[in-house]
Image (tube, chains in turn purple, blue):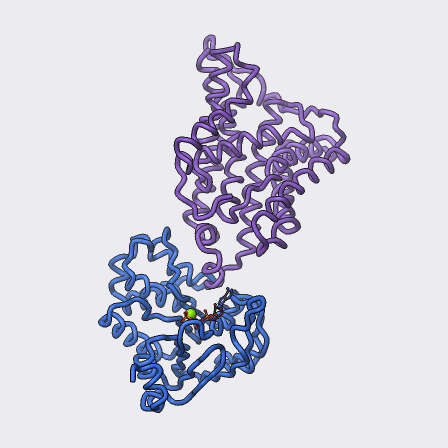
Length: 293
Length: 239
Ligand SMILES: Nc1ncnc2c1ncn2[C@@H]1O[C@H](COP(=O)(O)OP(=O)(O)OP(=O)(O)O)[C@@H](O)[C@H]1O
Ligand SMILES: [Mg+2]
């Protein structure tokens, strides 16, 4: 039993972690809470749904289309809603973020209807494997592996490539980075693309695990991932992953071992948030950032 | 190499630079001196493309090109054209290593070999940076950070190097070292625009100098002439 819970927690934690990375990257660079980020998660799932049904693409291609499509949506959000406000007071961008999120959700409601949709799942992902009396979904193994690979690639980009160097520089001193000739707006667009692509990956895997999707499916996981990012230390990618994992484990284990509390499962994240903010305001792995909202 | 004509800089209602004209000949060291708030930084920051509200013309002639007005262009365009700047207060990225700070200075370049050569050259100019190449920028001393800021400005392989108060906060011995290196950089073929409050040291190495007072040019002339000028002596060289 425990092994199954363990893999479930690992899966949920991975999915939170992948979303949390996008929050933390954008916050680290722009000091902006990108409220529309949870909606990228939702769009990723819808892209796959339409790619496999409407456009009748094979699975692997649908995933690629969904990730690229969502990345472009993330870039578009930055271009339309945040970039024009780069020099405005930060509260303006924050309000814009809330507005964009409402806009995307309601536009999705119109375009996709509120009808929950079922995402088609390849059999090999959902046919339970048995090891003795342990029963595991292949997904529960694949999700953590995919997540680990994505996080490793991301860290490589951040610490070993030129755009990664620029991202790290922008997060501390945008003007000096600009002075060095870095095309800052392009690097920021790239950050949104990466964050949105990871959210899409999470949304796709979420839709495989819990195959009902709707235009508001990004709300709760998005909020929890944001909490995971703050918990892990906002601005820190490693922190976002660790925060997501801890949240996933607490949620699954509490429900598993104290079934009486399962009605409160969505509240754990908030309790955790309050506790960490009281004890260590910068989060587990966060460093002091000059300006917080 | 660079001519500024009737440059104005505004910050909201503040009129910080009030119509100055400056010429920087190719291969020269031109210095801009003046008291706090005179508008020195505003002037060179507008050449670097960091100031939004500028009026006037900034005419740049690349070594192999014709004169063009670059006022209002983006900082990255300026770097690509061959104009680099070491900002006031050094602005080293504290969480990046010395090596990474230098790499950032070479961001626009794709010639990996050339970048490595220039990095080695910076390490020759400042051997202390080489010893500390893996150290975080924030852990360097003030003098080392200043060297890194100057070295970083050289990494884009610029034709015009602008330095905003490179001697700020340095001990006298280090000030001399930094000025010697500015002379060396110039001797190696780079045109230099030097903003300074240390008027004596700046006038000594400058081929031409402008003295800025509350946003306007009060006096200009060859460095050695201004050194002897009684008005300059009184106001800037301590009598
Ligand atoms: N970002 C800004 N917003 C508003 N006013 C500014 C800004 N930057 C400079 N100023 C004003 O413009 C004037 C010129 O400033 P500037 O920084 O160019 O002077 P400076 O000659 O470089 O002085 P210092 O020697 O102290 O560095 C000052 O009165 C300053 O207060
Ligand atoms: Mg200044």
